[in-house]
Amino acid sequence: MSDIVRLSRINFRHLLVLRQLLEEQSVTQAATRLCLSPSAVSKILSQLRDCLDDELFYRQGNQLLPTAKAKRLGPVISAMLREMDNLFTEEGFRPERFQGRMNLALRESSFELLASAIARVQQQAPGMTLAVHAKESTGFQSLCEGRVDLLVLPHDLGQPPTGRNELIWERLAEDEMCCLMRAEHPLAAKELTLDAYMSFAHVGILDADLQQPFFEQSLAQLSRRRVLAMEVADFGAAASLCRHTDLLFTCSALWASMAAQASGMVVKPLPFAYGKVGYSMVHHQSGSRDPALQWLKATLLSGFKQSISLG
Image (cartoon, rainbow, N blue to C red):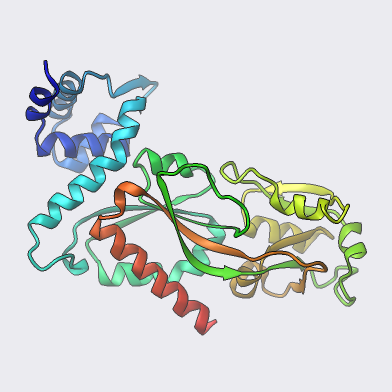
């Protein structure tokens, strides 16, 4: 069967089913979301397997896991479906008329900074289901597989974030690093010198996507190496640890000034020159023309900037 013949046998429903299977990884759950019977979804999946000459999914326990080809198709199909939906809207994208699901991934600590912006999304697009995933379990790979539309994360601006050319980065804000400690810490009432900073153990942040220890390399250039006594997944957990110990936590100054977890703690500037950090939005290049994604990014950006100015 030629490629043209295969493509001619795929219709709009096939694309909807494939996208839903990629999101739910379950025939039953996909059928429920699409208001179809499980047997109808299974039949369409069988047709897709025949047309695309690929299994697309394989079963592992109660889950359907996508094949490499299905993962590659994910972001492309999501963008195609949204563009097709936009064809029927003469006035362009109107958030109040949008009906659909968008998937956002971010660190739990970033949620507090974006809470007002996310509330604005819900107010302006009440028909949009915004699924917010934890960055710790949903990273760059999920963008490439189409399971996430937009990722928000803090990172060092001087650090090459990823080698994936298909991912597009857009800056939300620039920030600086600071040192966080409890009010009863031995250094709380003193000037924070480099020697004092290095004399205490620290808590670090785990990140499977940003593995290059850029901060540690900056310290190494000063012939210094800090002791990481603990590593946790999020800023809030690190701040909680510091509240009960003499550990030091180096984090975003913007987060420290706005986060409830940092309330009542002592914030000091770093005792050495360190480059800028920032918050960025990351999406797959296939979403560059997606009107819903472009609106979501613009709304988060404006809401984020407003929360910073009010803070």
